[in-house]
Structures are given as structure tokens and as C-alpha cells.
Image 1: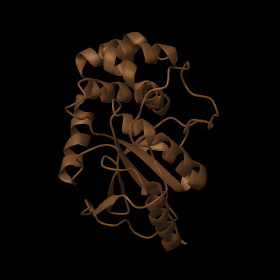
Image 2: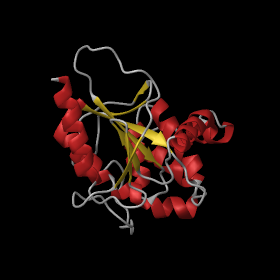
Image 3: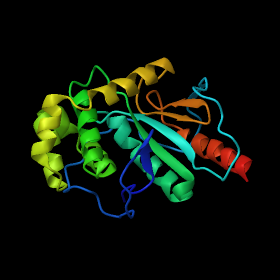
Image 4: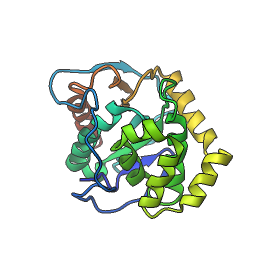
Amino acid sequence: MTLGSGWGRPGRGWETGPMSDSPPTPSASPVSSGSTGSTAATGSSSPVAPTSAAPAPGPARAVVLDVWCELQCPDCRGALDDLRALRDRYGDRLELRLRHFPLEKHKHAFAAAQAAEEALEQGQGWSYVEAVLGRVEELDRRGEPFLVEVADELGLDAEEFDTALIDGRHILIVDADQAEGKAIGVTGTPTYVIGGERLDGGKTQEGLRRRIEEITDRLLSEQA
């Protein structure tokens, strides 16, 4: 099952589409993914200083969950199940927003973040993110040629994809996300920010989905 609609980023809507029970790419060999999402116990959390004034009261808005992610991170792939479960539970009441945080230890992560932005431009941002995360070991081995190959598999313009990786047209977006992440204390991935609270999944993902649900339920009830 893929996330489909409901995945976005600040100021830029990602593609919408029905959720599916089939993966977005041809099947690949299973990959060891390190820690995976869980609803037991509690994860590490910290308050985040607000970056802007609270909006004026009005119609109910979707609760925003910023997901700081990088596409060469096995733990981010492990978090997909939690994100799907959240999407199932809340639908359009919860807006998932991808924020890039490529880690220095992963040499292809910065290129992968740019590739995700190009996929967004071509209308299949989340499908691309999910496809790459599902084949992390191939990205480890093959780097940018693999990123272009996945684009071709999804029916995207692979030639334009290759050009975008060469000319760096999406670098500023990735740099801005990473700078903001560092400013609010993000050190690893996945990390979530919701309701002014930072939840660090780079250390452990145990209990993070449950904590996100608690915060989301509270924020939605405050709008009622």
C-alpha cells in the first residue's frame, strides 16, 4: 500500500492520487532496514520554537507533520509503515510534509534529495520517494544511475531527470531544508515535527507513531 495523496511540502503541493495496495516499483530483494516503526514505549522528543505567529482562527485546518527524511536511510524506509498507518487513520486531516535532511555518511543522499524534488516537478514525488526507499541497497551500490533508472520505471522523463541532477536546479531547496533542520535540532533521520514538538526517530522509532497520534488528536480536538 502506498501513501498516495496527503504528502506535501511547505508551499508546494505534491501529487494526489488513490492509495494503492501495490508497490510503485517492480519488486526488489528484501533489504535489512535497521530499526522499524513501532507503537510501543516512547521516543525521544523535544520542543521546537515556533517560527511564525499562530494563524488566525478559521475553518479547521489539517494538522501538519513535517517528516525530516533522507532517501539512503534504512530507518526512513522502516518508518513508511507508520506513515501509512497515520494516513489511514487521519486521511486529509493530517498533512505529511517531506523535509530533506541528507546525512554526510550517505554519499548519494544529497543527489537522492534533488531527485525527489525533480520527481515532484514531474508529478510523482511521493511515488518516487517510496520507490527509492524500498531499494536502499541499490542506491548504495549504484548512486545516480539508479536514481535515473527509478524515474524511468515510473514513467517519468528520465532524460530531464539526469539533466536536473547535473545542473543542480533543486540544490537550494535541499540546502534550505537541511539548514532549517539543523536550526531546530535535527541530527538524524527520520525526525518528525508536529505541534511544536520534535520527535527523534534517528535514535529509536519506538512509540513515535503513538506520540504523533496523541498530538494529532489533541490538535484536532482544539479545532473542534
